[in-house]
Amino acid sequence: MGAVAPASPDPIPMVLLPGFDYRLREWRHPETHETRWLERRKSALQGDADD
Picture 1 (spheres, rainbow, N blue to C red):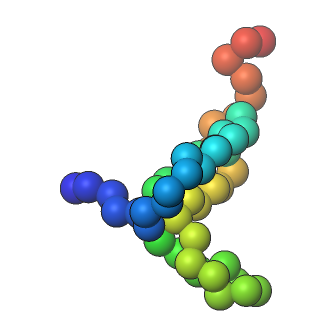
Picture 2: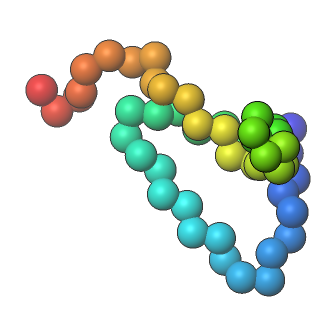
């Protein structure tokens, strides 16, 4: 399965934060109803691997 995202003339910077799972999929923001392409959820894993 492939992913399709809107074309952009410039690179789009992304910051991935630790402790979250990310999925590339289309969804609508609940307040603005804008289409977004990156879904972020709290990670199901507990604790850090560095302990």
